[in-house]
Image 1 (cartoon, rainbow, N blue to C red):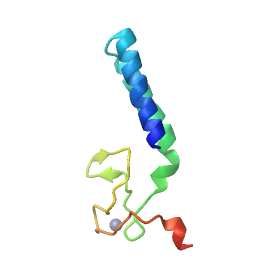
Image 2 (cartoon, rainbow, N blue to C red; image 1 turned 30 degrees about the horizontal axis):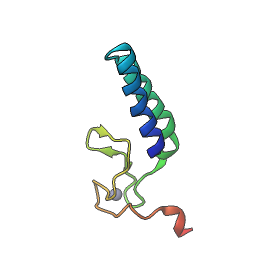
Image 3 (cartoon, helix red, strand yellow; image 1 turned 90 degrees about the vertical axis):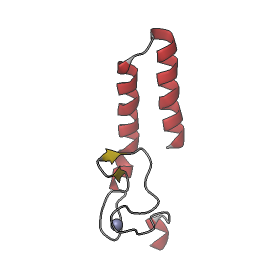
Length: 82
Ligand SMILES: [Zn+2]
């Protein structure tokens, strides 16, 4: 995930240098991040079901460590408890 984010930032910087400031490259990078994030959008709070990528009205490319609604610690991956 961090690699994809770095790649997206790199893409924006490279296109920015070649073509000047381009909102198209920015949109492409955001699309890339959305595609990369699709499996992670199921990362919901185990207690109240709130998505960890939503912080108020904003969607962030990394999950919250603590649930913003009920305060549950989300840092521990749920797959380890199976
Ligand atoms: Zn919660």
